[in-house]
Image (tube, rainbow, N blue to C red; front, side, top):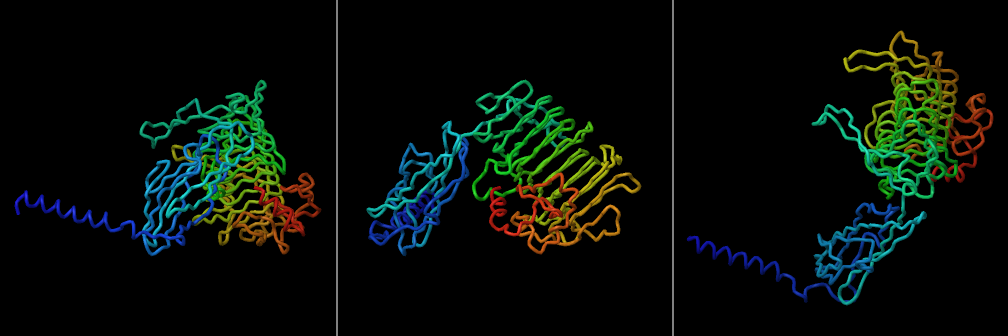
Length: 514
């Protein structure tokens, strides 16, 4: 066959194929009539709280043609047109009006929806609504769209520092950060000398790393929300202080920017709250920290004051470690740390610790967990592979629960033989080999505390729990109320949550309030 004949043959072939495809459905073969309708996987597409200027996750709407014939949609559009806060992607088209959309017989169509909100200077959430309109066969069908939007204070990084990283091509990582005292009213920041107070009328969105600088104290009050972008962190530098004091009914929250349903309890969405070596007198009281990589990272203490005092604090859904201490001094009362991919509480490189009426529980369900709930360690290996001993001055646990989903052991004691590290568990419920004859374990219970629903984060104990009335009242005297504000009797329930007979309503509401 000559080249010309081959070319003519290919043209004729392509023409015939094209005619088959483009003439296979004429107007008379589309589904028609009053009884024809579309169906959807949702009649309303809802978006949770979206921060202004930052858009949202993309959501998907499935459109189904259940007819035995193909269906031609004359147009798909938003009711509010160009003024809508929503944007559509219909069959790869982002036009304001998408025309002549075909869905095959017994087939479906994806529509992707985003919402973008502009700053509105309102402190309360606002409801933004619209409709997707489908026009076909002389009639219309609609799907409702609504989103809750909220303005926020933004802390955007304007400074940078270089951090050594041998794995990087340059040998350094660039860390971009903002300072907690910067921004004035625009950032909801009030400064009086070295005292900083952040307003609590709108969330604070953290981009990059936000730093409490040396010699400054940042005060956070009841109801303040800190919402972190992916990989963002919060640091307190040497000689800096974080004073975060909320209320039982209005805790301070450190959480992700993502509030839609899928991400509400997803771990690993942001970095950590880090207290650099030399930060001092830090307080977390009625605070919730959730859905990050490391809940709280506390570096070596260089003075005799506690690096951090935690009271009435919840740390949960951390993809790595809940509380990670590297030789620090920590005091904890009414603390719950739960559901972490690695250790829930890792006390390493020595340090000094005291925990009263705390619950450390690990029922991580997203992957196989191999690490214990609690690690206690008194050494580290330096860059020259030499073992450096740093004793635990004390690690005291009173009226605490340490439990989890591992088959046998939830306490890992990684202590050098012959050292002087000191630890003590008194009136605790523990998942560990029975250590009743060990003088470091006094009046402890080695049995299941019978949590209500630990996989879902409900760590209240049931009516048959051995923790009820098994605590030592001498320790609850200084912590008379549990993490939800319930008064403790004498003897109290072991753990951060006091058992209440009629707890199904009041305590459950307190749990869900998180």
